[in-house]
Length: 185
Ligand SMILES: Cc1cc2nc3c(=O)[nH]c(=O)nc-3n(C[C@H](O)[C@H](O)[C@H](O)COP(=O)(O)O)c2cc1C
Image (cartoon, rainbow, N blue to C red; front, side, top):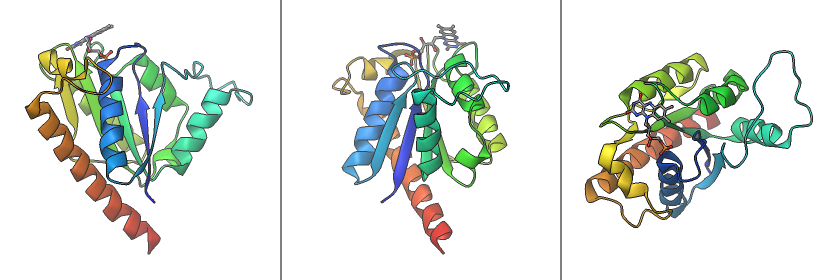
């Protein structure tokens, strides 16, 4: 069974990017996928330092193990200063191409302004650097679209947002499925 990890990179309890991540997780579970959501607010990882081994940090050990075992990955971030959150960047600094190499990666962002393209572009640059395969689709929710994720179960989701998210999730799963078939041969 395809194993997907969603890494939610907001440090905010009510984060719309995290609630969107939960919605994406639910859509994927409906399609029979095994999906683990790692919320960096709930399970923070220490500041990265090349001098440290972090042998006894359970949150970090779990993050590394899960990312290693993932067949495909979703990265979700709030748009901060036209970039990704420091929390997500710090988590990614702990990881390498061992965790991302050859895997399809979907980028997701939430912004105060209309679109979150700046952080999404930068996230795709990081994914490329980690030898991941950027999904050609991405998800940006901005401005009032964030109201779709003002409740934990997306009860208030707007029809256009729902359509877009479902479309992108389907495209991501299709590409991830094709890539894992290629790897099996
Ligand atoms: C430090 C900081 C920087 C931000 N920078 C931007 C920005 O550059 N562009 C933007 O549209 N929104 C910006 N925002 C607004 C956030 O993108 C917005 O609150 C978003 O919903 C956060 O995602 P979250 O709901 O997942 O926490 C910023 C917010 C903070 C706290």
